[in-house]
Image (cartoon, rainbow, N blue to C red; front, side):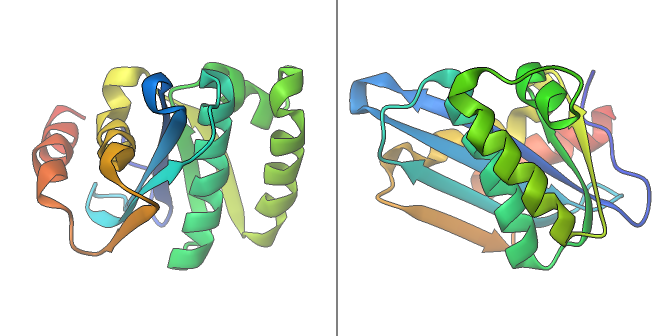
Length: 164
């Protein structure tokens, strides 16, 4: 399944986590788009801990929730390519023990919003979030973009909107 826009008036916040084993670090990428696929905000954040893949994905969802709040989004679909994390957030299956505290914390944070839904997308439908996560490799901390899309992301967003 490719990226699909949320129904109006919701936003969609896509997230992805990447592990950089050689650097003993991980990173997350977050992109917020509206119902027409327009870029609202984006974030690349490096995490200076040697996380495993599932924990990196869970951290990406957590950062996505926090970033949505900071940007002022109150109703959104939180989407990523980790079926394990999405199913745990939907409370359809048990989370791996390594991420249980993160899942509980995210579910508690979601009460601060009017509406949060969780969605899974295949990796090819999550390319902009993945590019943002990979972009953090050379960073010390994080970079955020509001309303102005970073140039390295433009083509991936255009492709997402055309294909969907």
